[in-house]
Length: 225
Image 1 (tube, rainbow, N blue to C red):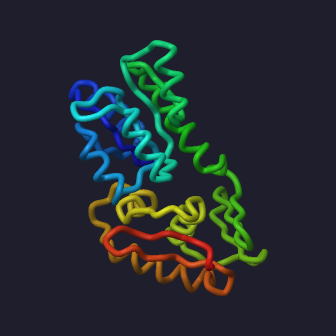
Image 2: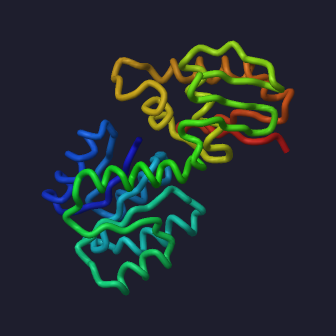
């Protein structure tokens, strides 16, 4: 899981990132709303963690901005504000969950995983069907019109990430981390090669789909108009 954390207090940021590290998740910390917003334009994350009060803005303002952009990445508010009206306000603005500082590590990780599963449509451990395509994540088997496709494990994982996020622009870094993990030796050219192979092996164009390349950003799987 790739997590963005909006938090200006170093001690709180260290507490959260330590939990994420122990849970095996990658993370990027932003200390101002401006830097966070700049990153959201070009980067992709599985879950966003927002603090309420920032030096240059508020978590609510950032959340409103995200939703106006139709960015539906799950948002967890993590703040010292514990009044019921604050929780209600955050949820009303589009937050998906709410925790009060300091979070317990196990609960934080469990809530983030729950948000990720919900965003994936609950298909994390089962089968995903999109049009004529079916992906069995337990067996790592992909089928097209019922026929098994010959894919390597990396190709299968990349296809699964793309089909779980149809219509969503996924950054290169997000795809590299989702499929290859936190591996500095993997080159971005590796991603490009796998994308090119998938276009052919999944017979996308013949079945009404395409992988659209967005220069300097990443890829988006979308139906052909």
